[in-house]
Image 1 (cartoon, rainbow, N blue to C red):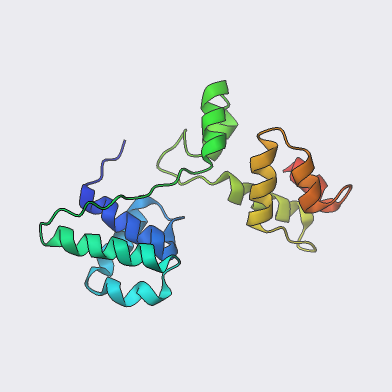
Image 2: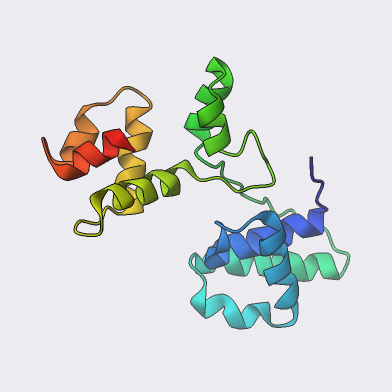
Length: 163
């Protein structure tokens, strides 16, 4: 298990809110460290500007040795699939969500999107958002959501179930 300092988590939080939340933690820390002297200048381009500014303010307080009271928000990677995989001992689900190799930032939603688009061969393109919604709800037993998203008896729906 990797251990990070409180300051590392502040750097991760800034990078997350900038829009780099798909990078491994080390990549987020590297980006924030590389830009440490000019983080404020990146606020205009941040994905979630208010939270990015808040994280940068906490970094500046920490640099001065002051307590920040800052709560770092962390989101799981496909957490519903992670929990279900752990509960039922599903190796494929565990691997797809980073439980097997925590050194890899696995993303089941990106993987299914890529698989679907490969199956569809470029003529049709499925968005990650649609693939995520279909997979997430399917894991809880939905058959309706994939049909609503991809249509009934369509190449996209067939690709979803094949993927």
